[in-house]
Image (cartoon, rainbow, N blue to C red):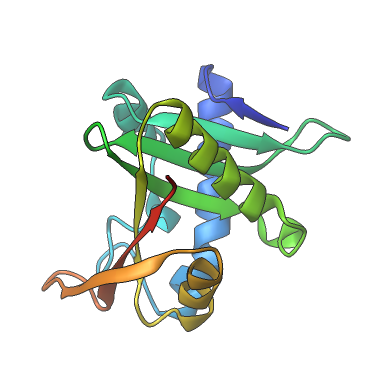
Amino acid sequence: MIKKIKSKNQLLESVEVIRISFITVAHDFNLNKENAPTNPAFITFNKLKELKDKGVKLYGFFNEINRKQIGVVAIEKANNALYYMEKLCVLPKFRHNGYGKELMDFVFEYVRKNNGNKVSIGIINENFILKNYYIKNGFVETGLKKFNHLPFTVCFMEKKIR
């Protein structure tokens, strides 16, 4: 079940889900607060609240059995046509069950309903498993950028949904 994150407790739970989900990638790529401070593995409650307060829509995926949150996705409107999908994650023990795909499809439907036509993401280019996952789901690479403050290359990808 996917629902909008509204309360402080849901936001706190979202922070934990994001941190736990992204720390696996942080470990795989030797990321830490010093070399990749903006990586979601290190997100704080205040940072997530700040994103929500500026209009980023946050949604949680909740386990139907115990109603615990097991996934998160953020949707940010860039302009009338373009939306950013951010912080898409599922807790490690719930991966490979289609929940990430459900969250992604939810974003596509949200964008369609709001008359957008493109979804953009930024990922670690060297994360070939994740990159191939997004390619399999219709995303195409639109550019690469090496930022001096990050120990990896960012791959920008987009999917047209109309």
